[in-house]
Image (tube, rainbow, N blue to C red; front, side):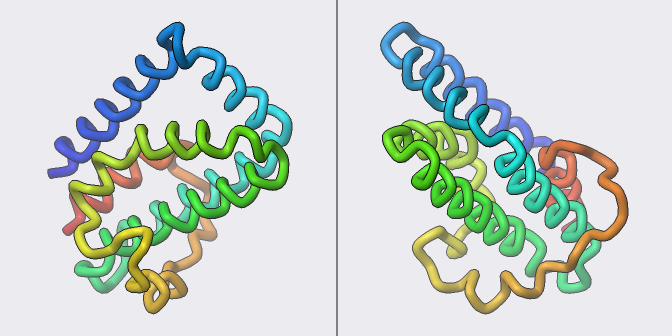
Length: 152
């Protein structure tokens, strides 16, 4: 199941990058880059927080909540990114949201079930996310995501 999850994620990233690199949408892709490069530290901090959460969730004691907590932590990441984009480059919000959705919506639809961005289900569990205090084994969230899926 973890292989399928990673394959779906890679497919979403590849599909989205191809769409954004096409002549028609190239300028929006460049705008996203300029936006992200205007404050790389904040975006890195947000990504690091999500990656740390995914590392911690691999061994979360309640197995049935591991995937929902992954989903909720992604939604928190996306919400934080979108709030920051609204502050530093509001004209690029739609492009950033399209990029994020293109990358992960297929995975979210595959694994998150009732835990959607619009649901209030995350409110009651997000604070249960353990804090990862060790150094990161992986700098990217992809392998920890696969490990969480594999762990159930």
